[in-house]
Length: 217
Image 1: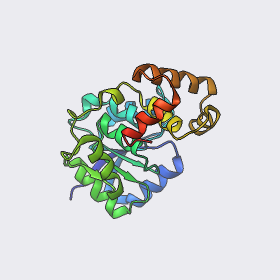
Image 2: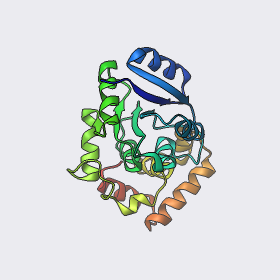
Image 3: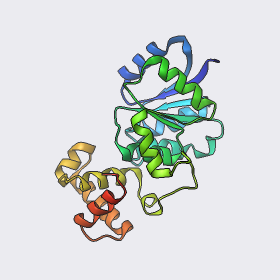
């Protein structure tokens, strides 16, 4: 197994340092980034084989890891993205895979498993933690990661709008959503208004039912 050149993208410096230490000589870390904007710049500069990408990142337009992948879509032939996150929410998994990532694992993964996942993704395979594979199959069908299988309505929403939609569907108040996503209540209201307009829905009740039908609550 060759030593893969990777970039680590996570907004927690302690996690990046710990991950580098754990992976040791099994990989060659050629860059790090903590925000959406830094990530796209570092990836283009370093051109790694694999990017280990956290899903929730500051910066950009609020789209997190999915936005990083979208900003680097022209590089996906050569650079593969493997999401690694504490989140195992279906919407997080689907949004980053829909953007173009090749895999998604949680931060509970073992070191050897992660090295194997990096190698597999570098070779073009799709890799998922066992519990998360079902989300991908539900969203994309049994063919796995297929860019031509899309939910046109969901694709109208940005990654941030999907986050807000999911929390609204779970019954969160605007204030609770603002606290959860570290944004203002006014920004939440704006996102909700855009979501309802894009999906042609008129109420929270309709939005909740829409999300439940797609099993993304």
